[in-house]
Image (cartoon, one colour):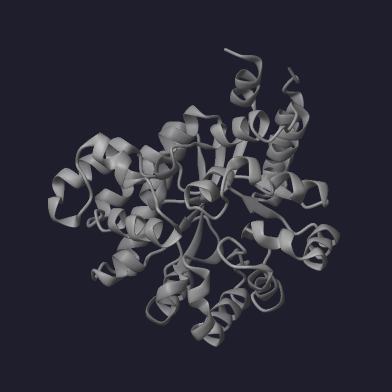
Length: 339
């Protein structure tokens, strides 16, 4: 094994920006597609990989929603979590904070308590069988905020899964404008209940969305944030306050948010002093993994092994893990010898 790959494999890692449905292993999606041939998701591996080639960000969202529609029973959800945990453990991922939007299940009439029970069952098995701890960020899509924001908040407050750590929003950022007051109000209610804010911002829109997340959603971390580089004042603010930005390079290229990996702004962000973590977002959909994101950062973007270890440490520090768990993981990261 080449030295860089061996080093990345040895690093204990934390994943902070990853979607549960988007993490469904290929074999799991194929099995679900065979069970539900009417949902529009190919049941053939080659065709599924073509299905995961995206023209643009809205096309990606359409495909994501189609995969979401395959999971119709609580057992499907728990099985999905177990498969995801197996993949995480194989990469040396010790802890992950999954973005989970309950909307697809709520729309089909699945009770909140049943959804939560499935999350809890999957998380228990993930820890028992694979040694991977899971946290949950309950979120809703920007494009359906009017329909789903309050329902997501209801689950988060009235039927919270064990390990819930934050409240979030994803989807098509440009769709938020008509729902600004609603979005602010549900985030305020979540904050009042003690749930930190972890919104997507600056992925598909400009710096103004990141400012909105900071000023009005009281963001504790920023999901993606890549377009912050267009605003020197925003870069200065993020650097001064060391507000973590969870970056997913391969995702940004696959969804056409960035034209190519060579043009990805990750290096500009770190040179500006930003607190950055590396993440995989929706790994099987983008043909990646968290380990691969570290390799991409090293091979394609020129980050040294010491800088990669720094990303791993940043992930731990930016997580909602308890202090003792953070100290333990940081010590393990520091103990991995540089190649």
